[in-house]
Image (cartoon, rainbow over all chains, first blue to last red; front, top):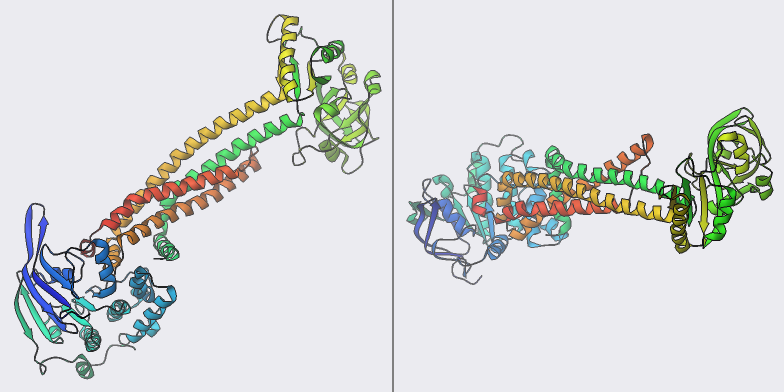
Length: 254
Length: 386
């Protein structure tokens, strides 16, 4: 909590082995993200964005270099400890939502809390709270199949949020959504960020990237630029939503 | 993760793949059901033999003549009583059968010519009337003591004692009714009539001869010693070992129990094999399931599931499949056993076989889940989410 940086990556490399061939995905990445920052990571496909996200999210270990999350060195931790870090400190948002289709929205949101071992009543309370906050009060018992893409992504955000993470990592969160639904997701991100949650999202869309306050560009496994978005150029999703044409019926009810 | 919740999640994914889960269960269902049904047939056979033997009375030795020249006379039987140690009763038995008629009702029934001692030897109790008497035997009286099933089937509620009946067209008087030994059976020991053996001899004319002796010893030890002594006596009399077949009821019971043990062992082996095959079926399905649900496993790991929690989920799933299969198997097996009893030989469900089959099914199911579950738990989250 008291660390100067929430995410601190020092000269991290990642090499994948495909049979005998070694494929370097990250060739020495150094970056530091402060608590409460909202950062976009851009780059062409194959530039190592997703690899970087996996490492930041403790889904994968770096081959070389050091990675500290909230002041804690992650590189040498066991599977068990990594799972616990993912459970407590990190919320993931994926392009394809990654909800479990056999569970209801509410149960999907409860999932990380189940693995944390919270009592049922507490789980239920927190999950409902998160879903209500994301405007899904009437969708608690729906299965993901019965929800629109935007609603599914909001369930995914609720799932991340219910666990009360330090960091939210989003990989192309608006990639499968139309512009209005995507804008709503970004509005939620900006609100969460304003409340102090550190947010990192991968995107290839410059307009999406301009919702954040800082843009990192990757190419060939290296950071090629790291710039701040000037406040007057930063897009406010709420303001944009106000001028966007109204949503189709059924997509955007709150 | 709480156990109950894992159960719920596992149940969900089983229900989501109904046909496949059912096919996976099928091996266990067939295994458990066939064990239960087969054992019930075996148990039924054993029980009916055992009950028949027990209905003969305890510490009883039967001696059958095996050869035309082997004749048992009343004098010989009286003689045996004093010569053989530990003998309490000995009586001749003449087996016959025929048509028993009362008013316009008639049934076919086996009959035995005996003495008044049959009540003690066979351990019957009178439900009404009196026993055969020494006088009945000496005077070749035409009197009958009827079994409980005969009383029920022929006399239909009328007290048989004192009734005139015709046995093979000869007039008899019923003097006694026996209490039922096996009340739930229509045939067997209770559906027999007893008359003095002397009367039986006269009825059958020249063809009559005493081919069976019933002997009752004072105790179990005396019975087996008496059986030995009897074999020696008849060997000396006829100079061949198979002239008289000496069968002690307790020896037979022991043999039946021994047979039963062998049979149970054999059925156990069959059960083991079929359940093993069932387990392989479950393992196959679970392996497919792990491959198919790679993404689900990735998601669970991304939100912080421990490897042990993934392992537990798949193990519980395998256990539920086999447990549900086991329960269905118990129902199917019990149903089959019931149907067999309805249309075929007697069966008896054994709670032991149900327990063993179900327990073994659970064990095999969980064991066959170990490898797939370990595979699921070892998946790398990045690979699983790709």
